[in-house]
Image 1 (cartoon, rainbow, N blue to C red):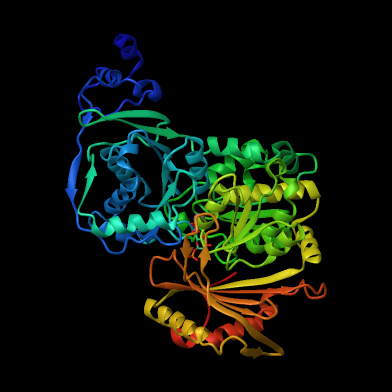
Image 2 (spheres, rainbow, N blue to C red):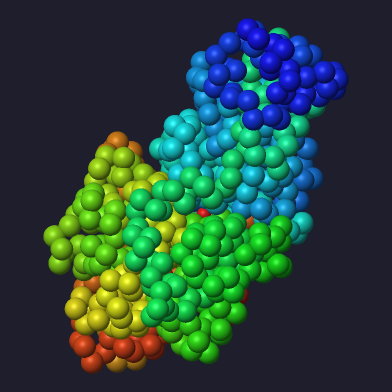
Length: 607
Ligand code: VG1
Ligand code: CO
């Protein structure tokens, strides 16, 4: 071994005993293959100590629909709160696999993210994990983490995000674990994490270990006697952009966005993580003018706003679009997995329709031309618009509970290519998360192929398939006891044998209950059963009223009411959904007594 030539290439050689890491770009793969090389390379004095810290377990670290979400203050003020949860996650990785394992780490840039990443680095090292891949400055969108997990064949990933929930010192923080497929951990694993967290007595940590999150390249540490531990900082966009180039026709998109007859687009990153992706891919590579993308610098508090792409919280974009200057508009959530699509003059594309349109136009996307569409899926509360396309194209349609984790098994089994949720989530089996920018490029591909406006494409779709009118009412931060009681009472009423067959009227409409249940799902791949996924009243004409409690809130309870009703009369399909659905909304509120039982006279957000 030639230690002297290494010495001249390595800035740390002779750098003093306090240095903990080599930050040169030496190849970790080469280094890791020989134990002696590392010790020499680092001067033999870079041992970081593992400390065992006594802790007390918390009873409330149950991951919800998408990870553990709590107020920042809960993570900050409760002793070892974050450490306990991180240790519980790492404990589900088999000890024998850890040294060879890579774990991907990234977050949406929110307040407390950097502290949490340093804790992950210290706890991962102390638990014998071999390799972390982290986005530069900790930044990496949720879809990009999924992409990188798959690309580097990691055992999993830890995502620091509370998605669309507000950030900042008084906002929310979240920690989420994804598995080797790149998808959110299924319930079997989140249950295990929760079980561990409830009895945790101690955790392992290397308190002196600090990674430089800003510097691209590998940092190699030696943990205790000898365990090479590599922290690799990567550009957060590169791998993800490379993947998108394979999925879409970038030449056609470039022509659409910057050719002679280009359209004008307006993309709002809402100060979330997707900013750097939009800048690099849509502006720099596809040639859209730099001022077509706004709020592209991730901020710890998302500029004081909710990074939630809906008509309420993305009102700035909606108003700008109403001006008529732009043909296409889109907004993204904090961690970049959700999207809202708007057409000229603010024409709103409901997310349940969005996935249906992409399905009906799948041939506009080269990826689907290559792979074909193996099947379609939607979450239970999502409207039946996708079902109509599945039927027409003779494709299999799956109905899953709320949350992206339920799509993963179907994708891994080759049964599912394209899916969506009513909550502004759209995606495909290119990764195992919903993907905001992917959805936008999918829509732009359709615009490029059809040479029509968003509104024309949507109206044409309704003409052909009929329209599922859909709305969601959210009642946020309702008193938990009141919300639970309302749901319990409603379930009792709905489970009464006389409920099926009951008729409810409002205005000139009457609906007869055909099915009344609490949605349960049996995974067609592994047979696992998920119960209590939402109360459903399905009427004889197929219209649906659904109630469920959110699993992503951080304070109180959020009640979600979903209404879906199909209309095929071409005279009626352009009506306002709120007008069309008024009788069903009225019935839902009467049957549930939501207002009386929660004291809420109106929803916080209407979609
Ligand atoms: C919500 C949405 C659900 C989505 C989940 C995570 O869950 O309804 O469709 O998958 O958020 O999305 P809930 O339990 O609050 O209804 V994200 O972008 O917040 O990770
Ligand atoms: Co999100």
